[in-house]
Image 1 (spheres, rainbow, N blue to C red):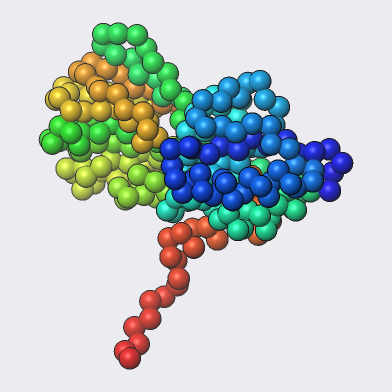
Image 2 (image 1 turned 30 degrees about the vertical axis):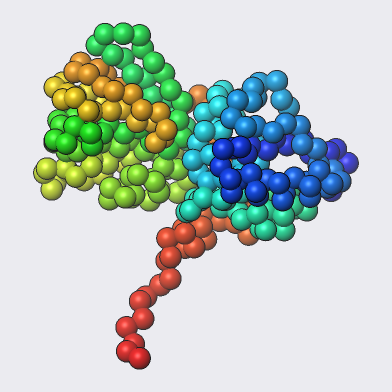
Length: 285
């Protein structure tokens, strides 16, 4: 174990009872652990630029990790997720597993996985341009409009297709196990450098998910937008769209950094979270 204490930030949402219960139980253990220093507790409004921490321990689900990544902005500290949500593809350690792995963490016996993040720029037909940082996906959704929309896709300025659909998802590999997966998109390994474009309920059956390079720029337009169409970033930021608005998605200048302890792997997580149990048992009792 290193002689230098490990400085960490703990992110724990005070408005979520199960998160606060877990943090109460973990706090006494962590504060009494030699070689560990809690530099700050992030309750949603922490300014990360002034903190020199080795990692951020996020207690909650994947949504809490998405918010923490966005809060950190251009200073992406390594994140270790302690899962209090449901699936938890990013927050893949239970509180008990976290405490069990603590000696290895303090000994710096872990690896850091670099994951693609994106910048989504909304250029309205009328109004100022907005740029948002995200980790999972950008969705143009017609759910509230209750009608099919025509979404134009261009890649690096080249017109590719027009989706007649309920919406379009542009997802990172991390987001490939989220909304894109439920819409029929493929699963990508988290450290790949690519985007997935997945139409939601396309009217034409030949419209399939598309995987392309993270070095490309993806532009979405909906020339004729009915009321109720929204731009949704990471399932947390929701902006109404109007006819003539343009959405550009490209690789961000930073990457999300995930702490992986020994014994943790992406395929183990998929096997456990998605119940990949091999062949079904057809034996009759």
